[in-house]
Image 1 (cartoon, one colour):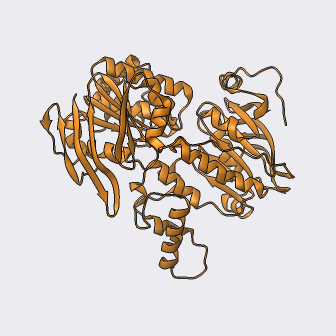
Image 2 (cartoon, helix red, strand yellow):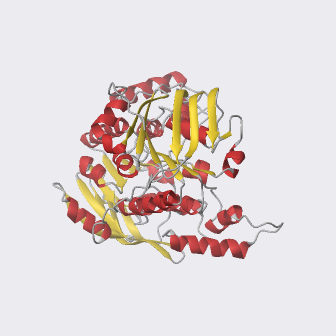
Image 3 (cartoon, rainbow, N blue to C red):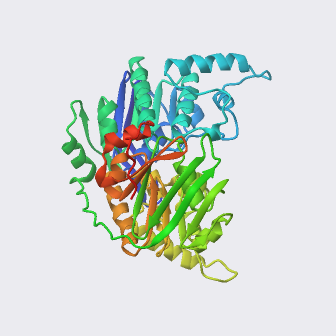
Length: 493
C-alpha cells in the first residue's frame, strides 16, 4: 500500500503538533518515524489511522485521495494502528479479544476463529493461548494479540507506536522478525520510535520529526550522528552520575512469598539503604512488578516479613506505606497513573493537599502551569491527559512526586522517553538520593540499570537469582541470569 501525506498540519489550540509534514510510505518496507517526545510522531500517526482529524493538508492511498475521519473508515482502507497501550479488554480471553469487530450475525463462530487465530499466530511464532485471560498477559504479549487482530481484519498498512517500550529483549526480537515478515509479504509497516537502536535495526528508511515538522530522511546505511543531529539539533551529552554514600537501612524484606500473575514471589529478601539506587531486571512476568507493589503496600504477602525504617509493615495498606514516605510510580500511565477525561489542572486539583471543602481551581491551574514549565511538558493546563504524547504523560506523572520521599518505587520510569529526556529524568531522581531517599526501579533496558543503579536484582520465575553491584557485572552476565543461568557465586551487597 502506497501512502502519501501532503502538507499535514494539526493544531490543538495554540499548540502546533504538526506543521506542514510531507511523508511517503512504500509497500514492502519498514518505514521508521523517529523523533524526541512531543515531536509530533504520535499525532501524525493518529491522523493517518483515523483517530484524529487534521487541521489541513491531504492524504493519498494508492494514488487516490483519501479523506476519512474515523478508525473504522481507515480500517476499511486497510490501515491499522498498534498503540503504546494496547486497546484490549483485560477481563476477556485472548480469543474473545481477537474476535472483536469481526463477528457478524447472531452465531458466534468460535471454532472458525480459533483456527484462524492459531494459523496466523503460528505463522509469526507467537505463543499465545486463545483461552488465556488478557489481564494475565505481558505488554509484549498484548501487542502480539493486537497485531494478530489487525492482520485478521486485512490490514495492509500496520502502524506501531513505540512498540518496544516496556517489553523484553526476547519479545522485541520476535516483534522485529514479525515486522520483517510483513514487509516481505508486500505490506507497509510504520515503526514510530525515539530509540535509534530500534529503527536502525529493523527499518529500511527513516523520517525524522522535530518540533512537528520533518527534519530529514535517510535510507540504509544509517549514520547515527546525522540522525541525532536531526532529532535534537546537537546530540545530547550523557550526565556524569555522582555516587551517593549510603546510610541506614530503609526497607528490609525477608523471605517474602506472594501470589501474583503467573509466578508471584518465592523467598525474596532484600535490604535497601538511604541514598541507594536498586535496579530490578528480568523478563516480563518474572516477579519484579509484584515486588514493587508489595513494597508499596499495594499487594499483600503470603509469607515473610517487611520492615520500613524499623516498623513492621505486614498487613498494612497503601496509605500507611505512603504516610511513612513510600511513593509508587506505576508503569501503566493511563490505567493506573492518570485519569482519562480530566485535564492537567484537574489532576493538580486532585493532588492539592490544601485543606478545605472547596476545590481551589486557581491554585491548581497555577500549579499545573508551574510544573509544565519545570518538567518541560508540551501542553497547556487545560490539555486533556489522553491528548499528551506518552513521554509527556510520563513527565506529568513525575511532576506529582513529593519533594521529600523516603523510598521511591518506580515501574519503568523512563518508558516512552527519548534519550535527552531520560538523562534529564535521572538527574532529577538522583537529587532525591542526595537527600537520603532511596530508589528501587524496574526497567527492561539493562543499559539503563547499569548506568543508574548501585545494585541490580535479577528476577527469574518469581525469585531473586542474582544480587550484585552494577560495577561488578555487565549486560551479558545479566542477560544470562535473566535466562535462569546465574553465575555460581551470587554476591550480595
